[in-house]
Image 1 (cartoon, helix red, strand yellow):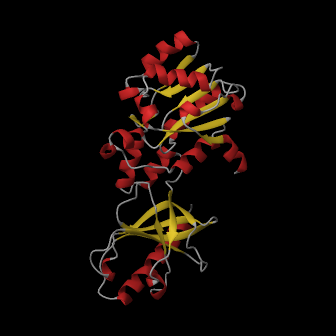
Image 2 (tube, rainbow, N blue to C red):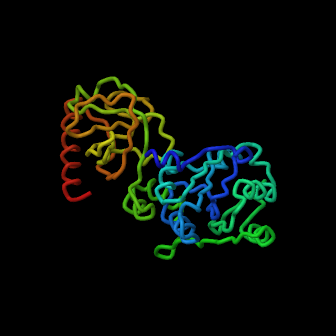
Image 3 (cartoon, rainbow, N blue to C red):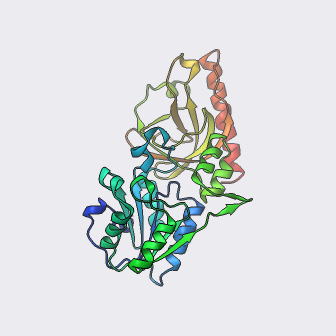
Length: 314
Protein backbone atom coordinates (compact mmCIF):
# COMPACT_ATOMS: atom_id res chain seq x y z
CA UNK A 1 0.00 0.00 0.00
CA UNK A 2 2.87 2.37 0.74
CA UNK A 3 4.26 1.74 -2.73
CA UNK A 4 0.86 2.56 -4.26
CA UNK A 5 0.63 5.82 -2.29
CA UNK A 6 4.02 6.90 -3.68
CA UNK A 7 2.92 5.89 -7.15
CA UNK A 8 -0.35 7.89 -7.06
CA UNK A 9 -0.25 11.67 -6.98
CA UNK A 10 -3.00 14.30 -7.17
CA UNK A 11 -2.35 17.80 -8.43
CA UNK A 12 -3.84 20.57 -10.53
CA UNK A 13 -2.44 20.18 -14.04
CA UNK A 14 -1.22 23.79 -14.20
CA UNK A 15 0.59 23.41 -10.87
CA UNK A 16 2.14 19.97 -11.33
CA UNK A 17 5.91 19.79 -11.31
CA UNK A 18 7.63 18.18 -14.33
CA UNK A 19 8.21 14.42 -14.52
CA UNK A 20 11.15 14.01 -16.92
CA UNK A 21 11.35 10.29 -16.06
CA UNK A 22 7.95 9.63 -17.69
CA UNK A 23 8.18 9.11 -21.45
CA UNK A 24 4.90 7.32 -22.23
CA UNK A 25 1.45 8.21 -20.89
CA UNK A 26 -2.14 7.03 -21.18
CA UNK A 27 -4.94 9.58 -20.68
CA UNK A 28 -8.58 8.94 -19.81
CA UNK A 29 -11.23 8.95 -17.11
CA UNK A 30 -11.09 5.12 -16.79
CA UNK A 31 -14.25 4.65 -14.67
CA UNK A 32 -14.42 0.97 -13.77
CA UNK A 33 -10.92 0.25 -15.10
CA UNK A 34 -12.64 -2.47 -17.13
CA UNK A 35 -11.02 -4.81 -19.65
CA UNK A 36 -11.12 -2.15 -22.38
CA UNK A 37 -9.23 0.22 -20.10
CA UNK A 38 -6.89 -2.59 -19.15
CA UNK A 39 -6.03 -3.01 -22.83
CA UNK A 40 -5.08 0.69 -22.98
CA UNK A 41 -2.83 0.15 -19.97
CA UNK A 42 -1.34 -3.01 -21.50
CA UNK A 43 -0.45 -1.16 -24.69
CA UNK A 44 0.99 1.71 -22.64
CA UNK A 45 3.34 -0.62 -20.78
CA UNK A 46 4.28 -2.32 -24.05
CA UNK A 47 5.74 1.01 -25.23
CA UNK A 48 8.63 0.80 -22.80
CA UNK A 49 11.12 -1.73 -21.46
CA UNK A 50 10.80 -0.04 -18.07
CA UNK A 51 7.32 0.41 -16.56
CA UNK A 52 8.73 3.22 -14.44
CA UNK A 53 8.86 5.41 -17.55
CA UNK A 54 5.09 5.02 -18.04
CA UNK A 55 2.43 7.22 -16.49
CA UNK A 56 -1.37 7.31 -16.39
CA UNK A 57 -3.19 10.63 -16.31
CA UNK A 58 -6.81 10.59 -15.17
CA UNK A 59 -9.35 13.15 -13.99
CA UNK A 60 -11.65 13.71 -11.01
CA UNK A 61 -14.55 14.17 -10.98
CA UNK A 62 -16.09 12.97 -14.23
CA UNK A 63 -15.99 15.96 -16.63
CA UNK A 64 -19.74 15.66 -17.26
CA UNK A 65 -20.45 16.10 -13.56
CA UNK A 66 -18.90 19.58 -13.93
CA UNK A 67 -20.11 20.49 -17.42
CA UNK A 68 -23.60 18.92 -17.46
CA UNK A 69 -24.26 17.31 -14.06
CA UNK A 70 -27.66 15.99 -15.11
CA UNK A 71 -25.97 13.85 -17.76
CA UNK A 72 -23.14 12.49 -15.60
CA UNK A 73 -23.32 8.68 -15.41
CA UNK A 74 -23.32 6.87 -12.06
CA UNK A 75 -19.84 5.71 -11.17
CA UNK A 76 -18.49 2.17 -11.22
CA UNK A 77 -15.46 3.00 -9.06
CA UNK A 78 -14.71 5.49 -6.33
CA UNK A 79 -11.70 7.76 -6.95
CA UNK A 80 -9.66 5.68 -4.50
CA UNK A 81 -10.65 2.39 -6.14
CA UNK A 82 -9.82 3.74 -9.58
CA UNK A 83 -6.42 5.03 -8.51
CA UNK A 84 -5.61 1.73 -6.82
CA UNK A 85 -6.61 -0.31 -9.88
CA UNK A 86 -4.63 1.93 -12.23
CA UNK A 87 -1.58 1.71 -9.98
CA UNK A 88 -1.92 -2.09 -9.81
CA UNK A 89 -1.30 -2.25 -13.57
CA UNK A 90 2.29 -1.22 -12.82
CA UNK A 91 3.00 2.25 -14.29
CA UNK A 92 5.58 4.41 -12.57
CA UNK A 93 3.06 7.20 -11.97
CA UNK A 94 -0.70 7.66 -11.69
CA UNK A 95 -1.50 11.37 -11.83
CA UNK A 96 -5.02 12.35 -10.72
CA UNK A 97 -5.93 15.76 -12.13
CA UNK A 98 -8.87 17.72 -10.66
CA UNK A 99 -11.23 18.69 -13.48
CA UNK A 100 -11.52 22.37 -12.52
CA UNK A 101 -12.73 25.45 -14.39
CA UNK A 102 -9.30 26.30 -15.80
CA UNK A 103 -8.84 22.84 -17.22
CA UNK A 104 -12.39 22.85 -18.59
CA UNK A 105 -11.80 26.14 -20.43
CA UNK A 106 -8.37 25.26 -21.82
CA UNK A 107 -8.09 24.95 -25.58
CA UNK A 108 -6.78 21.65 -27.02
CA UNK A 109 -3.43 23.36 -27.73
CA UNK A 110 -3.18 24.79 -24.20
CA UNK A 111 -4.04 21.41 -22.67
CA UNK A 112 -1.38 19.69 -24.72
CA UNK A 113 1.18 22.39 -23.94
CA UNK A 114 0.68 21.67 -20.23
CA UNK A 115 1.03 17.94 -20.85
CA UNK A 116 4.36 18.58 -22.57
CA UNK A 117 5.48 20.84 -19.73
CA UNK A 118 4.68 18.20 -17.12
CA UNK A 119 6.19 15.42 -19.27
CA UNK A 120 9.09 17.17 -21.11
CA UNK A 121 10.53 13.92 -22.49
CA UNK A 122 7.21 12.59 -23.77
CA UNK A 123 7.46 10.05 -26.58
CA UNK A 124 4.04 8.37 -26.66
CA UNK A 125 0.42 9.17 -25.73
CA UNK A 126 -1.92 6.18 -25.61
CA UNK A 127 -5.70 6.82 -25.69
CA UNK A 128 -8.94 5.15 -26.68
CA UNK A 129 -10.44 6.07 -30.03
CA UNK A 130 -13.18 8.22 -28.44
CA UNK A 131 -10.76 10.35 -26.42
CA UNK A 132 -11.65 14.06 -26.41
CA UNK A 133 -9.80 16.97 -24.82
CA UNK A 134 -9.83 20.74 -24.54
CA UNK A 135 -12.66 23.27 -24.23
CA UNK A 136 -16.02 21.87 -25.41
CA UNK A 137 -14.17 18.61 -26.21
CA UNK A 138 -12.93 20.15 -29.46
CA UNK A 139 -9.80 18.00 -29.44
CA UNK A 140 -10.05 14.42 -30.75
CA UNK A 141 -7.61 11.67 -31.70
CA UNK A 142 -7.02 13.15 -35.15
CA UNK A 143 -6.13 16.48 -33.57
CA UNK A 144 -3.88 14.70 -31.09
CA UNK A 145 -2.03 12.95 -33.92
CA UNK A 146 -1.64 16.24 -35.78
CA UNK A 147 -0.24 17.98 -32.71
CA UNK A 148 2.00 15.01 -31.96
CA UNK A 149 3.56 15.12 -35.43
CA UNK A 150 4.55 18.73 -34.73
CA UNK A 151 5.60 18.29 -31.11
CA UNK A 152 7.58 15.09 -31.52
CA UNK A 153 5.48 12.39 -29.84
CA UNK A 154 3.58 9.42 -31.22
CA UNK A 155 -0.16 8.99 -30.66
CA UNK A 156 -1.28 5.40 -30.19
CA UNK A 157 -5.03 4.83 -30.59
CA UNK A 158 -6.44 1.72 -28.91
CA UNK A 159 -9.62 0.43 -30.60
CA UNK A 160 -12.54 -0.72 -28.44
CA UNK A 161 -12.23 -4.23 -27.01
CA UNK A 162 -15.03 -6.38 -28.41
CA UNK A 163 -16.82 -9.38 -26.98
CA UNK A 164 -19.59 -11.14 -28.90
CA UNK A 165 -19.44 -8.33 -31.44
CA UNK A 166 -20.13 -5.58 -28.87
CA UNK A 167 -17.64 -3.22 -27.29
CA UNK A 168 -16.78 -3.51 -23.63
CA UNK A 169 -17.77 -0.15 -22.18
CA UNK A 170 -18.67 1.38 -18.82
CA UNK A 171 -22.23 2.03 -20.09
CA UNK A 172 -22.66 -1.66 -20.92
CA UNK A 173 -21.44 -2.66 -17.46
CA UNK A 174 -23.86 -0.21 -15.80
CA UNK A 175 -26.74 -1.73 -17.72
CA UNK A 176 -25.72 -5.24 -16.66
CA UNK A 177 -25.72 -4.15 -13.00
CA UNK A 178 -29.13 -2.51 -13.41
CA UNK A 179 -30.42 -5.85 -14.73
CA UNK A 180 -28.69 -7.84 -11.96
CA UNK A 181 -26.50 -9.57 -14.57
CA UNK A 182 -23.51 -9.61 -12.26
CA UNK A 183 -21.65 -12.40 -14.08
CA UNK A 184 -21.68 -10.33 -17.28
CA UNK A 185 -20.50 -7.23 -15.42
CA UNK A 186 -17.74 -9.30 -13.80
CA UNK A 187 -16.64 -10.67 -17.17
CA UNK A 188 -16.35 -7.20 -18.68
CA UNK A 189 -14.72 -5.68 -15.61
CA UNK A 190 -12.28 -8.55 -15.24
CA UNK A 191 -13.19 -8.73 -11.53
CA UNK A 192 -16.22 -8.61 -9.27
CA UNK A 193 -18.15 -5.34 -9.02
CA UNK A 194 -17.30 -3.76 -5.66
CA UNK A 195 -19.25 -1.04 -3.84
CA UNK A 196 -17.61 0.98 -1.06
CA UNK A 197 -19.38 2.67 1.84
CA UNK A 198 -18.86 3.72 5.43
CA UNK A 199 -20.63 1.88 8.23
CA UNK A 200 -23.00 4.18 10.14
CA UNK A 201 -24.65 3.38 13.49
CA UNK A 202 -28.09 1.82 13.06
CA UNK A 203 -31.23 1.45 15.15
CA UNK A 204 -30.35 -2.08 16.25
CA UNK A 205 -33.37 -3.72 14.62
CA UNK A 206 -31.14 -6.36 12.99
CA UNK A 207 -30.06 -7.52 16.45
CA UNK A 208 -33.71 -8.05 17.39
CA UNK A 209 -34.16 -10.16 14.26
CA UNK A 210 -31.09 -12.29 14.98
CA UNK A 211 -29.12 -10.79 12.08
CA UNK A 212 -27.28 -7.58 13.03
CA UNK A 213 -26.55 -5.39 10.03
CA UNK A 214 -24.05 -2.72 9.05
CA UNK A 215 -25.72 0.26 7.37
CA UNK A 216 -23.55 1.57 4.52
CA UNK A 217 -23.62 5.30 3.84
CA UNK A 218 -21.72 7.70 1.59
CA UNK A 219 -22.00 5.38 -1.42
CA UNK A 220 -21.13 7.22 -4.65
CA UNK A 221 -21.36 4.27 -7.05
CA UNK A 222 -24.15 2.63 -8.99
CA UNK A 223 -26.20 0.36 -6.73
CA UNK A 224 -28.05 -2.70 -8.03
CA UNK A 225 -31.87 -2.69 -8.01
CA UNK A 226 -33.55 -3.04 -4.65
CA UNK A 227 -33.58 -6.59 -3.32
CA UNK A 228 -31.79 -9.16 -1.19
CA UNK A 229 -28.38 -10.44 -2.28
CA UNK A 230 -25.69 -12.87 -1.23
CA UNK A 231 -22.37 -11.03 -1.31
CA UNK A 232 -18.91 -10.83 0.22
CA UNK A 233 -17.78 -8.04 2.53
CA UNK A 234 -14.21 -6.92 3.28
CA UNK A 235 -13.66 -5.61 6.82
CA UNK A 236 -10.74 -5.91 5.81
CA UNK A 237 -10.75 -9.73 5.71
CA UNK A 238 -13.28 -11.16 3.26
CA UNK A 239 -16.44 -12.72 4.72
CA UNK A 240 -19.71 -14.12 3.42
CA UNK A 241 -22.64 -11.75 3.84
CA UNK A 242 -26.26 -11.04 2.94
CA UNK A 243 -27.20 -7.56 1.69
CA UNK A 244 -30.62 -5.96 1.76
CA UNK A 245 -30.99 -2.88 -0.39
CA UNK A 246 -34.42 -1.34 -0.07
CA UNK A 247 -37.00 0.47 2.01
CA UNK A 248 -37.67 -2.15 4.72
CA UNK A 249 -41.47 -2.18 4.15
CA UNK A 250 -42.12 -4.48 7.12
CA UNK A 251 -40.78 -1.80 9.46
CA UNK A 252 -43.03 0.96 8.15
CA UNK A 253 -43.81 3.02 5.05
CA UNK A 254 -41.88 5.85 3.53
CA UNK A 255 -38.31 4.99 4.44
CA UNK A 256 -35.51 5.89 2.00
CA UNK A 257 -33.56 3.05 0.35
CA UNK A 258 -30.79 1.74 2.57
CA UNK A 259 -28.01 -0.78 1.98
CA UNK A 260 -27.71 -3.09 4.99
CA UNK A 261 -25.05 -5.80 5.24
CA UNK A 262 -25.31 -8.81 7.57
CA UNK A 263 -21.93 -10.49 7.84
CA UNK A 264 -22.20 -14.20 8.54
CA UNK A 265 -20.56 -15.58 11.68
CA UNK A 266 -19.34 -12.18 12.84
CA UNK A 267 -20.11 -10.33 16.06
CA UNK A 268 -17.56 -7.50 16.13
CA UNK A 269 -18.03 -3.73 16.05
CA UNK A 270 -18.09 -2.18 12.57
CA UNK A 271 -19.36 1.40 13.03
CA UNK A 272 -17.11 3.94 11.36
CA UNK A 273 -15.09 1.56 9.18
CA UNK A 274 -14.99 1.54 5.38
CA UNK A 275 -16.45 -1.62 3.89
CA UNK A 276 -16.16 -2.99 0.36
CA UNK A 277 -18.93 -5.31 -0.86
CA UNK A 278 -18.63 -7.50 -3.97
CA UNK A 279 -19.52 -10.93 -5.47
CA UNK A 280 -23.19 -9.99 -5.74
CA UNK A 281 -25.77 -12.77 -6.25
CA UNK A 282 -29.49 -12.01 -6.36
CA UNK A 283 -31.61 -13.96 -3.88
CA UNK A 284 -35.08 -12.37 -3.93
CA UNK A 285 -37.10 -9.18 -4.11
CA UNK A 286 -37.76 -7.21 -0.97
CA UNK A 287 -41.34 -7.55 0.31
CA UNK A 288 -43.53 -6.69 3.25
CA UNK A 289 -44.06 -9.41 5.89
CA UNK A 290 -47.08 -9.61 8.17
CA UNK A 291 -44.95 -9.84 11.32
CA UNK A 292 -41.39 -9.53 12.57
CA UNK A 293 -41.39 -13.27 13.25
CA UNK A 294 -42.20 -13.97 9.60
CA UNK A 295 -39.38 -11.62 8.60
CA UNK A 296 -37.03 -13.38 11.03
CA UNK A 297 -37.80 -16.76 9.42
CA UNK A 298 -37.19 -15.34 5.93
CA UNK A 299 -33.87 -13.80 6.99
CA UNK A 300 -32.74 -17.20 8.28
CA UNK A 301 -33.73 -18.71 4.91
CA UNK A 302 -31.79 -15.97 3.06
CA UNK A 303 -28.69 -16.71 5.12
CA UNK A 304 -28.99 -20.43 4.42
CA UNK A 305 -29.36 -19.75 0.68
CA UNK A 306 -26.32 -17.47 0.73
CA UNK A 307 -24.25 -20.17 2.43
CA UNK A 308 -25.39 -22.68 -0.17
CA UNK A 309 -24.50 -20.31 -3.01
CA UNK A 310 -20.98 -19.67 -1.77
CA UNK A 311 -20.45 -23.36 -0.98
CA UNK A 312 -20.65 -23.96 -4.75
CA UNK A 313 -17.61 -21.76 -5.38
CA UNK A 314 -16.32 -18.16 -5.23
